[in-house]
Length: 254
Image 1 (tube, helix red, strand yellow):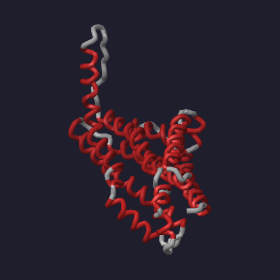
Image 2 (cartoon, rainbow, N blue to C red; image 1 turned 90 degrees about the vertical axis):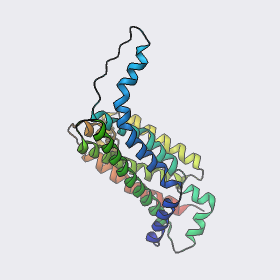
Image 3 (cartoon, rainbow, N blue to C red; image 1 turned 60 degrees about the vertical axis):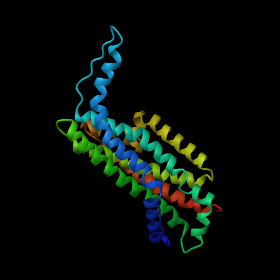
Image 4 (tube, one colour; image 1 turned 135 degrees about the vertical axis):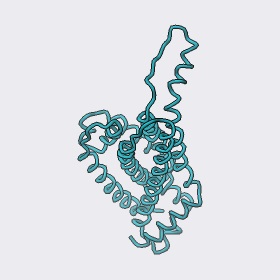
């Protein structure tokens, strides 16, 4: 891991000075601010759409703080994870296409350190951005609704963050394996949608990291959780995925 600390510092500086600082953090803060408002306005919006249709009556219960948290978590699952896939597609392939990978690897920097720094910097950005998003969501929820479900939301988002970190590793692997950003993004989207599909299969959800997805919803509603297999397999997949990415990158020509 020669040069890991120095290259990680370079990656963090690059994040602060480029668009990467604003895209995913911007989305998380935006959803944190708007999710409680959307949850509060949903019954009124549904009523206004059905008012012009005689005979159509849709009764929705009064929105609660739980609805705000559920809306925020749904946005994380859908929009933010897709943004993670698209942004991660160019993490390694973009460096190779621009020629900067060759430049930095002629320095005292190992390929393993290159890959690990990419993964760690992305996860650090995601953790910081998620903390900001959750804080914004809790603050607006406290203003709009009575009551709070802070502990449940934090627990659910922590599970989401573990899956998102796994997706970061997977996208780094695809970005190292494919020279084309489009191919890496396509493979990442395929992985994302397959995990959504198989998360509904009970054995897969019980004994693999796919169980993190239903566990997020259960954590939010306060149901009992069985996280041993999902968390253990997610951590194992992150470690093995990082090792596989290093191995693949070490065997490729730049």
